[in-house]
Image (spheres, each protein chain N blue to C red):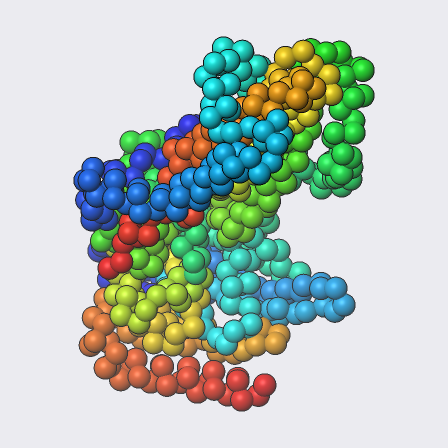
Length: 288
Length: 289
């Protein structure tokens, strides 16, 4: 399909039609603070409680390290952490990418052939309900200690939300749009490329957001079972040594990977689907 | 009825003298010529889970090239089904459906279709929504752009070409849908309650514009509507249908000139007579229920 049909020109061209006020830098800052202070405050409160518990030694220090200790590890062993973070990120991204490609293809085939759908759906469901954590050791036995089993688990865990959201998206197309393309004499692939696929993207992206966070979990689960690198390995090692500051540092970095990837998917959605309703700024909608 | 029409504005080659030129000899349909749209004793039955539903029965209708026919009737009388038959989106259970004398079997690309909802692609601007028609039909890009420009000017969309559907009002969206349906200069335009979702004022305005566009393009139009005044104001003939099972109860010749000033037309005796008659027919139909 042409990249044009998924990526319409950004809304700025419409400026003449919809008199949308472009807020200045100051106004935008105020707006960002306005909408962003609550989660920041909550996060700060959590850190404060953490710090309070550690400072008052309510819990033994070897069980809960202070934020300061954790920060020392993050900065002092940044090289070590960075190396393992990179491994986990690599596994996650590769697993996510494979899950997206395979998931989207499977969804397309399932939507266009009810026979395939009936055949594949039970298997998909089975693959989803089998606890991936339980099969992870098997993958290590089969595929060794390298990154392959980690990627495979990330794929398996991220695949399901991609397929489900894409199938939903492809099926949610306005039937009148399909009738319309029939009256235009459209070939099936034209209807797919120009109508069905772009129309399904908002659904796909909600699935991608779930999938990308799950992919991190998948990669770490793989590392737990058998690895000599990656954040899962770091956490296991730290756990074995009762090195709780390192354990907390590993957890923080791991969560950060998930958050960053989630935000990246959201940014991609905003760039690719500026038209999407849930992304619409209420001030933009013109009324006349 | 169609003979009396002023045809100087026509762009396409519509037979002027009652369409006699179109038919090869006197062998064709009831009107003695090949009709743009011909329905002959058509019935449509749907099979649902536990019973068969007859949506249409014994429907016969000939629409001459360049004619404007409105179809009115209560909900569920099969008006939309009738349009879908002509477009080839539905198959008749019995009877024959013809477009320009050709049997319809399968979706027909030589029509333009306008739905009640504009059915626009949200990710395309107004202009690119109109051009979807050209892209799918693989029309030469230059020609399509020029034609789109003409239609945008004709329907009063100028200045809104680059707006996305959610930035347009309902009336504007419907204009985009109309342009899209007219882009490939279809000989037959099928409209399924195109203005049903608009407010009364916008609707009147759209009616006036549709009248003008019809005169300027010379397209054959089949319009399904709930509004009696819309039907009478726009059409040469009004087909009144009765429900369950849907069938044609009467076809009324409106007898107004093609160029119609809105307020003036609504006050004319022909308008009032036709509208009153149709209202009576529809009232009788609903009283039977």
